[in-house]
Length: 237
Image (spheres, rainbow, N blue to C red):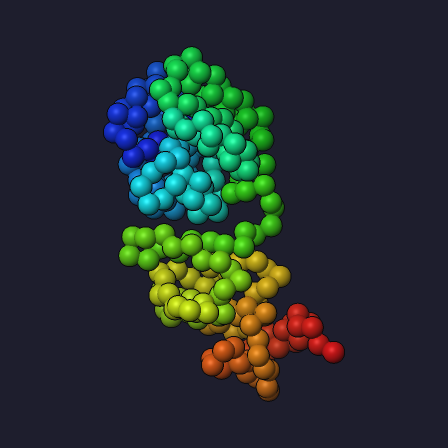
């Protein structure tokens, strides 16, 4: 199993590295001291298992899990036993190791992960929470910060080349991503792509006239091919 360590404590990373290297089932791909670097790595590479610390500066392990579209199996490592209760909210978390980590307990945890993967049960763990629907929040990467966005506060999203402009009630964010990728993070019952350059929140529509939509003070074009589908989505009397 290809695995990853995410822990801000250097001693903890060294101990976990030592334990991983003792297990023939594990192939330690890399280790990171912060969630942001691990997030970037996982955007390019796939792993089967993450040993994840919960209490890290600025960004908790639980927040990190929620940024991952398809999280691998996760084993929590922490000195805070109370975190185990919250861990049950995430199907991707399969075990909880309390620091200082006992080698025998570590081995049993690895065996559990190996069994889940070998039995093909990973599919049920590829979600950031117990719900199978799209979460009502997501995170965007702005200047090395991960900012939580509540989907119901998003008015519209406009494509700008390799970037998008995401308009909320109070702010506008310039994000390096594509319209199709951000659309995957949005609740499909509330959002609709009305044009190749625009996604709108259906709940924020003020007015529709001819081939345009008014959202706040923004006038959004409607593609001719999208108009009929849009009419089916709104609550038309």
